[in-house]
Length: 469
Figure (cartoon, helix red, strand yellow):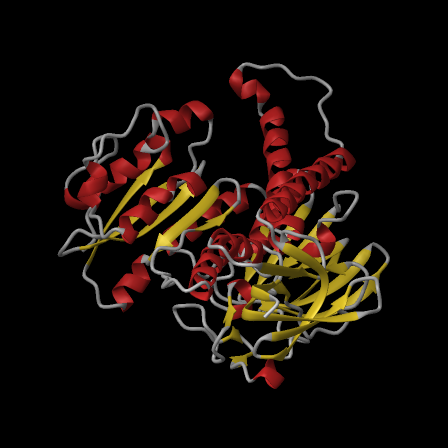
């Protein structure tokens, strides 16, 4: 064989798999048809967080008087904001390319097709030529693309996905967001901060349907306070060209409403990239949800693995990276298993949302007797001093053992704080283990400690709450 491992896709799953295989002594080929870093780096996690940081700093400027500061003539240059976003992406992409090179990995730019259990044909980008490569093991990491919706007028110029939104050179005056999942809610937060009037349309009965209901209720209040209109249990039935952008027809379940909007963002989820890979010819089991894999990330064909979004499991960059390491280690003769019981998920709204483990309802549906404790950021000294006291920490624990089943946070730096919950669930720790670990003061981490105290005892810095058992 030419290579020990060939990886199709250079996103957060693929390039990590390639590096791990190389670290284990493998001769590795990495095939990427577009930019290194995949969707996460180029059109997802990193560019959106860069825009969000600019939005947060803009909000800080507008709130200057609250902190005894004076700022005159303030404003923002959206072109400069986009330039910084592009510079950050380019810097990180260059870092990944250097990492790949330093590990002795061969990189081929082009689209790969499986032509046998150990063979790939690659359409070399820009050359018009095809080359064949052989590898002892193959890892598929082709990621996902935005889903579309079968609505008349979908192809109008003002109807866009997150990919196009990231390339806009100015903030729309108004935007209708279809889908109140992670992508829709994050872009809502960013665009609203820069003055865009945002309306959200969600077909399900609630925004963020996979998030614990207590956090969703609190976020709903925050969205209303920001002037964001939310229609749940509603669906878009048609788009039409309008003088000021797009005319959108929405069936709310009670009536038919029409909105005249400058831009429409379709944020109805993502679908795995399965087309053109030769999966049928190779006999690899898959369906519309993705490629079927086991806990070793093996497909139905020996020697071929699949990782990340293309499996249709948890479409998160950090899950893809972990799965990439598991697949690479198994491809190189080790024995590694993928676990999904303690996967933290973050939503970068303002304030942030972060969750890990079971929601309260999921725990009840799973037959657990549960204890629940909540602590508000408004009672935390650090949060109040920061002027960011919206939100809460909620812990769901097994009523019998005290083990942490889930942790759910809405508040400042939730994406950092959630790791206490992930470590607790991964290592079968109890709420008492968290509560009786000394946390530094004054810090936001104390919110987690206080909530943990509420499982088996009483919270010090909050009026006594009724325990839910």
